[in-house]
Structure formats: C-alpha cells, structure tokens
Length: 153
Ligand SMILES: [Cu+2]
Image 1: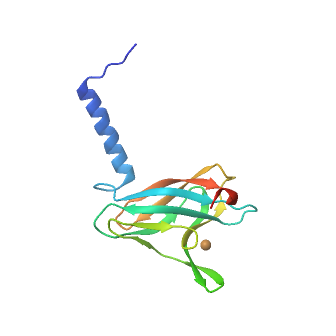
Image 2: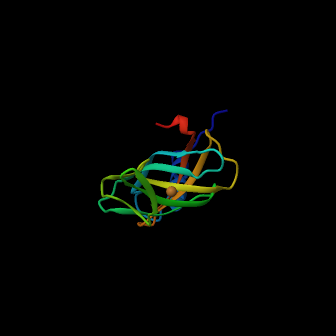
C-alpha cells in the first residue's frame, strides 16, 4: 500500500532532518570545510598507519585543522615529513591551514595523520573514522578507506 504524505508533513520531516544534521555536523551556518580522497595507508605488524585527506575550504577566511582524533585508534597525531637531502624526519604539527577558497592536502611526502594503537583489528578494505576539528568550530567525522601499501600509488 503506498504511503501518502501531505506536503506539509514531508516539509516538516525534511526540516527536522536538516536541523538534526546541522546540530551534529557543525555549530552554525553553512559547512565551510569538505573532504575528498580520505584514505589510510595500513602497514603490517602493528606499524603506525598514515591517514591522508584533501581538505577544501568554501569560505572566504582561512580555517585551520587544529585537532584529529579517532574512535578506531588510541593515538592520532598530525605530523609533517621534512626532507633534508637524503634523510627524512617527521615533526609534530599543531595545525594545518586551509586557505580561503582553497585546499590543503594531507598527502604522502608532506603531512600525514599518524595513527597508532588500533582499538580493534583493522585491515585493508575496512573503513575507519577520524574526527577532524577546525578553528571555526566545525568537527567532521570523516570515513577513511583503509588500503594496503600495494593498493596505493
Ligand atoms: Cu608520523
């Protein structure tokens, strides 16, 4: 039997859904930051994994990524890889600025989110979630696709 909704009921349902989504996804106003290509480079033997993502800022002000956490890992930290001739080292980064109307890439060779202490068994093909917190008050709970080193370029 088809279910008929009056247009006012449908409108109320849509409004409620939008309100709930707005309350959980961001504090106020339109969402400024969106993500693309979120993935994790998984390594065997409990080695730290690397989280990578492209952040896009639709607003007219720069916004900083200020914190990363995850329910799937005990430790998630933003690191920057610094090349010094033939050697590489990584340092803690306390923020990453996403320029106004621009993007910032957390990508191999630059930044990575160092992921350690998995809270459950995580394997290639899984999806993990990282909470990305921004200076404008937004927090994004972003799904990351877990890939093995052979699946990544
Ligand atoms: Cu690192």
